[in-house]
Length: 101
Image 1 (tube, helix red, strand yellow):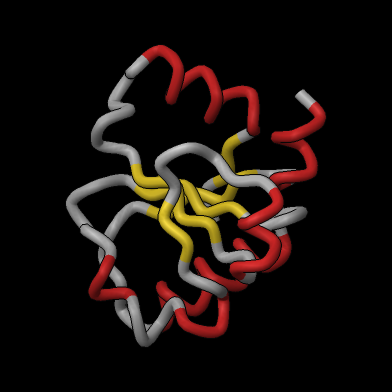
Image 2 (cartoon, one colour; image 1 turned 30 degrees about the vertical axis):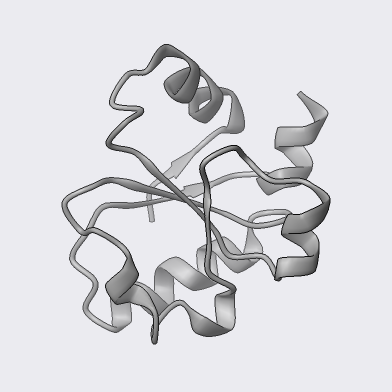
């Protein structure tokens, strides 16, 4: 499973390097997202990622984030097992790391 740091994700989003192509998929629950979220991110809770994977564009790379990195890794495993063909990257440290920057 590919991983990226919150620093690299932030730099990529701020620099615009493929930023318009990059999707940030937040797999936390809606109440968690309401407290803090990355601007422009897509929220699909972990329990719904497989049934809603048609909402993702496999032609666009997707950085998957949660609170700490565990649910995002599970989401990537579930999507991969379900046959999702797009590029998925786990954001290590999740929103906890994002907010501490």
